Length: 488
Image (cartoon, rainbow, N blue to C red; front, side, top):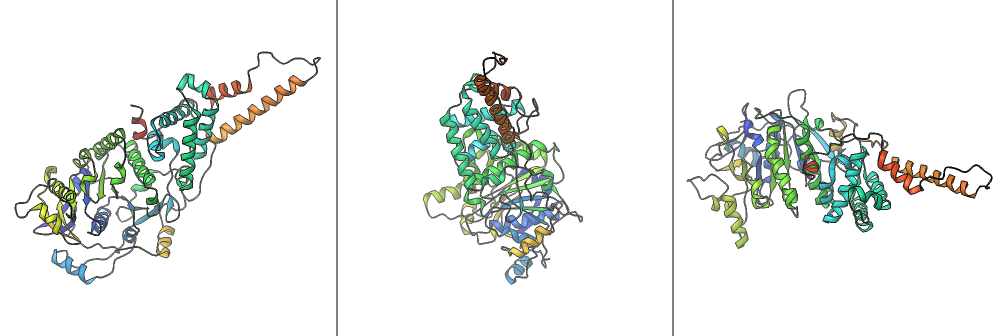
């Protein structure tokens, strides 16, 4: 059973509890497909919610939506509950808020282009070094001149302006080539076609929405519908990286709280590191290491611990390892590597046990008193209180209709930003050009206009470079991953 300071995970030779005091020391849930990782994630999410800790998780396959509905009696699960000393299962739903980048299966999730920053956006677009350099220049111009980049229209407009005025911009910021700008624009078009433009704009997500508790003290379980999102894995990984960076940037230091302020489950965690440049991996490692002092626990879910870099893996104190298969030499090496990450138990061979675990059974090693890794034990995972599996569209709509977020994020807000400002400047320049043409074609007897007039392009460029936007000099906060990319 849960205690005021722990979550009951399951039992083998002895009960296994996750101590809330050390839950922000992060964790790992690993195992082959079909071995029970999703159920383990589900019972941990339920446990954190009961303890008053809000949760954020991505629902990759659609079955975690079952957290919003009460479970049903199941003879096998009831038998397991009795076997591990849990007693009768009290089936009940968790308080769930649904989110969806596409706005179809939950409230829309948005951020601004400015807040994402050039480093994450470059990774999302798979830009070359030269293209990333051009993107950084465009962000630098926006930062220096207080120009808001809210959505993809803003970014594309400023890229076009940079290409048209590359000579003037290049003397201050660096070389901007038409080829690089064209390549970025094409990749932005592809991102639009994949639905990525839905992620950029306003109202941007307020992190406080993810940290709600209910009237009876339970933490809200925020579920991101990710089944459609997984068709664009880089967008999925980039979104979660952005969310991590925002949490790190905005939350205050809290030291070692009695329980986390928020727990973040990162399913399909290997996508975070696939083809990631070393600089980005370094930033991720830094955020994972430091964010626990903000009271945030991060739990990675993946098939094999080797999917994660050693520097990240070494920071994951609470571990649940489901079965791995050892059919090939590579598989056998992975099993051995996974076994070596545990504090050994003399009662059994960990490497052998990993290949013998049944569905719903795992090797569990949570942190004990003083944050010391517990001795690994072969454990039957407790049954969930909520439904195993997906929900119906009607059930989802019912949950959304009762959401504490209401309709706050359901409608896009399009305020004046770079796209509108540059369009207005272009119209002003066109009027200046028309007046110049009229003056040149007027009779010679008319009073001449000033002979020192700048060309249309010069006037437009200097005007924009001096005073684009309406918040000149205002610092733009972009989150730790974007900021660190500039060495700050």
